[in-house]
Amino acid sequence: MIERTFAEAQLMRLTGLDFFPLGNEHAKYRAELVKALCGCSLTDAHAGAIVDLCARCLRQAPKPADLYQFAEQTAERFRQRNTNGDCPYCHGTGFSRTWILHTHEGNGHYREEQVSASQYSELREKVQGIGVQHVAEGVVRCQECNYGRRLAVAEQTERQAS
Ligand SMILES: [Zn+2]
Figure 1 (cartoon, rainbow, N blue to C red):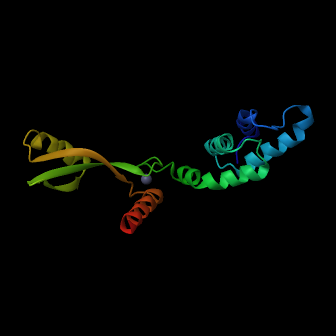
Figure 2 (cartoon, rainbow, N blue to C red):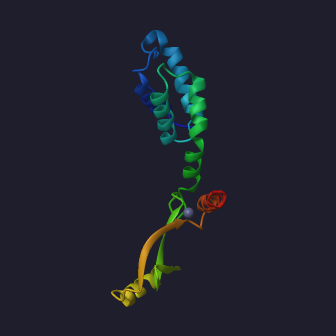
C-alpha cells in the first residue's frame, strides 16, 4: 500500500499514452486508476516498476486490470527486498562480502579457501608478492538471512540442472 499522491504522480508519467483520462470529465476514471495502483503496489519502488512496464508495453492508457497484472509480475522482487532490508549482513541485497585465499598448485590448478576478514588482512601481509598464494575479496550469497539462503539454493539447483 502506498500514498495516493505518490500513485497519482507516477500515473501522470503515462499521459502520453493514447486515451489517457486527462481533464475534469475523466477525474472519476483517473481516481479508479490511482486506487488500483495504491492497492496493488507493495512499495513506492514497486509502483514505479509497474508504471515503467505500462510505459514500455502499452500504447493506450492502462486499465486497472493492467496495473494488477503488472504488479503481479513484479511483486516477487519487491516483496523480498522489502522484508529483508533489515538483514545486518547484506542489507537486503542477498550478497555478502567474502575473502578468498587462492593457492596456485601449478599447471593452472588452484585451490580456493574462504577466510575471515581478520585472516584476510593477516594473510595479505604475508602472501603479498610470493606469487603462489594471493588473497582476494569476493561476494557470496548471504547465509544470515532467508533471502540470501533461498537465492543460494535456487542458484545451486539451476547449476545442477544445466
Ligand atoms: Zn542477508
